[in-house]
Length: 512
Image (cartoon, rainbow, N blue to C red):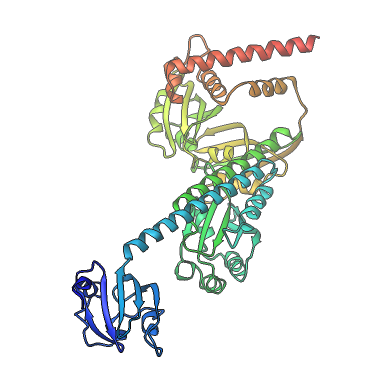
């Protein structure tokens, strides 16, 4: 071999009559073998799937070809050029594995960016559809149709979670369900552990990256998914606070369909959908003239029942304020026990915290403030669109009176409020309410106040900040809201100004 070829920075192999006659050192290193002098070129070179090199020497003359192929035995990508000569052919070989890795990385990142952009646009489309949705069924249908008919996924189905019966009820499917969805539906109806059931029971999304290989998925679903070419599943629960309303199952044809960004976007979608479902329920109650008033009996699963029992105290709910962390701050009138003792007992009650005495009238009467965690039955009732009218807790028992929209599922709410079983319904009454000046005034004020102003004003009122003498200082009210005293005073001044403006505007309009 010419000394210039010997010293070349790439591999050079001289082949005559199909036999290797010379090979420089770079070629030996690339091929991870001893010098193959005297061996057939087909044996000296590792095997590739395409076998392009042996074919170049198979004909009556050597083919002038160039190609890049992957060689599994040495785990490398090689760039190969075969150049025929008068009495011998020369094979030039170069290791391009690093370049291929970079290309694949760039392609993967580009695909992820394109997928993320498409998903963001898709989710924006879904959210736009949620704005006009007027019921849980309409919201689920919007999500199902937009996801199921997109090019990103094979199909999507939605189900409603019935808490009191621990049932997952299939609502519908969109896209190309193939044989996979019928298998999923059959498994759901049989109560088997499909990804969607796990998602609603945990209240968190469930991802299955390889459907056909995941042993936690029913065998019939795995087999159908394999036949349909379905690779991955993302089960998204529709959640608001502690309430799980339903689930969306999204099925894709690739394992890479649900990147971290996609999962994060879907989780946001699930939370917004849960919020929208809750809002539709609240809107129905707000706008409806007909209401259903239901009285439930609460047991020791309620932290306020346990609190009253620990201090043998009677507690009556005066009002609530939604806490920033999805809990509920409750203001309670205490009878028959020292309010200080009731607050001390809060620390020993699960799902209750931040007890504080607002007012101590005497040794057995006063008002206290307690924050409940999102798992508390009272919080679940509010999360599900119920308006709490009254709630009392005494001698280890509780009684909760709520207003619901006429089409609300009382059985489902009873299942949420109960411990081992549904909470007993003590009374149920349907009634018609007519608009009143008070209601109109409150609606007008709610429209004027920001959420922060309304929360600050209501908390200060319930905490006896406006009484004389005050039951709470500005610092105490601010601490319960997690804000500074100056911020609280700013919100109170703004809300009081709007309150007076709403009052006087209404008086003027009424007198004109």
